[in-house]
Image 1 (tube, protein in one colour):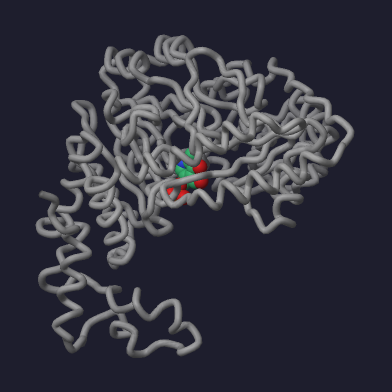
Image 2 (cartoon, protein in one colour):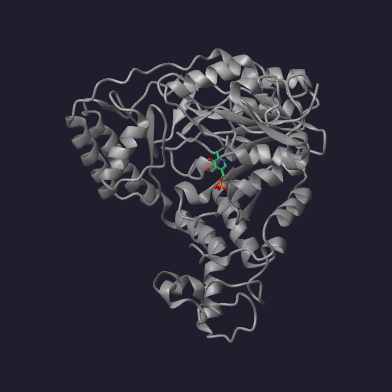
Length: 483
Ligand SMILES: Cc1ncc(COP(=O)(O)O)c(C=O)c1O
């Protein structure tokens, strides 16, 4: 027997009482709202509530929110689960602040999401970056090797935690069992950004979630591949090495004191739905995804299946599409002309993200569009492999010759310099070329001639840069610090 989703149910029961509202929010269940928006907002405003009697409080969950969080913990086999209303971003920030005091070291995968770097800045901690693998067939960065984590732990046994991103944007992941055991040997927590793996562990076709494998804390964007509203995420914990009461303090500090009930209820409904019907729903979605992969095998110029290193798993929901004669960007444009919008494109790949909401007809339309594109002959784009050497160099953030602390970058005066003149300065911006999506220059890192030459080469090849303001890579912001 499945229970009703506690938060959603309480909101509906409250609305049914036809209550008189003399509390916030000011739209009073939609009574005062611009009529232009009524069509789409009307229903949702009726359950856009606040912490009144019977509706609990996210920051001190004791009733319906606690119950809903416990349901989620139970689904994912976590000890405790926290609802997040500011995405995985806030989970990452809170975790880093929980484990690091100013000056503490944290071992962190170099291609993590910017929220992890921002967490390190806020904590005034010191990142020890470790390089991820670059996957040949896709030319994208992915996960780290156990031996890489081991080397970093040996060199920095005082590190307070290891922070990894698994899976990557393209759905590539590794089984983290070994890294978890290794980290625990050093008696520190393994923290995992599983933003793209909210569905992991929920069906045999998906890899296991890191929380099932024994990671200490795992953050998932439930809004990415499941059915929560945007900003709805889950933070799962199960740890002997994390101070949970401190984590709660940081979550409270970083999240609004008026968290959105529609977002929380959407998390609640997602968990409830998965518990009741998850298996059937996934079977249905996966059936059409398998159909798509099978049909796509017959495309002449377009590829959706790749050869991955043995230790990698690929999430079937992340459909990576390559055309032998078109860049990923161009293929994306052609698909948009067909009214098909993708998650992202890079120089070589397009990424179509399927989810619990993907319908067979969506995949039929994608396949039909790809077939039309496949009929046209385009001259072949040469797959150039990324020179690996610069991405394999160890970056030692504690070496004051090669970097300044992230906090320093924030508070120092800065100036913008033409790119070649910036050599030798400490960067006040990140430069992340896609592909392969690994920051080539990190915040606070000293800019070297090799980096600049390589980035200019990548630019000429058509790579796009993120992180930096001047995306044409003519200039870069640097700190004023003198040697
Ligand atoms: C790897 C990774 N981590 C964290 C985030 C932030 O997640 P959210 O949008 O749920 O805050 C993202 C967002 O794209 C991401 O890709």
